[in-house]
Image 1 (cartoon, helix red, strand yellow):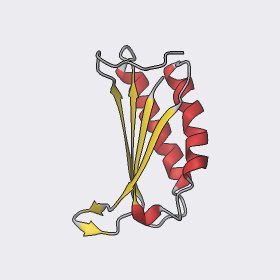
Image 2 (cartoon, rainbow, N blue to C red; image 1 turned 135 degrees about the horizontal axis):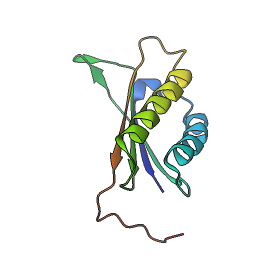
Image 3 (cartoon, rainbow, N blue to C red; image 1 turned 90 degrees about the vertical axis):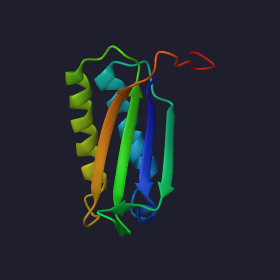
Length: 114
């Protein structure tokens, strides 16, 4: 039950197909971390700056997973998500993107549980 946050530059609003990205991202994450499913993704658009300059084409994805996966699994997932972002941003000149896979805190709870 990973949580995924996609933060992206408002300059990408017309260029980034979020439903298509999420449709590929969810099964990728579920498979790589052997999860029962992904149903929680936040997509947030805001002004972005790279090297202090406005108007950057920047995307950052954070995947929060339950603790217990190895660093190797997390690193492989990061690489896979980077490749997926590259595919979806291939037509955007100067696009910059990053990924962080992190453990959810031990206090994490979900309601309702499935």
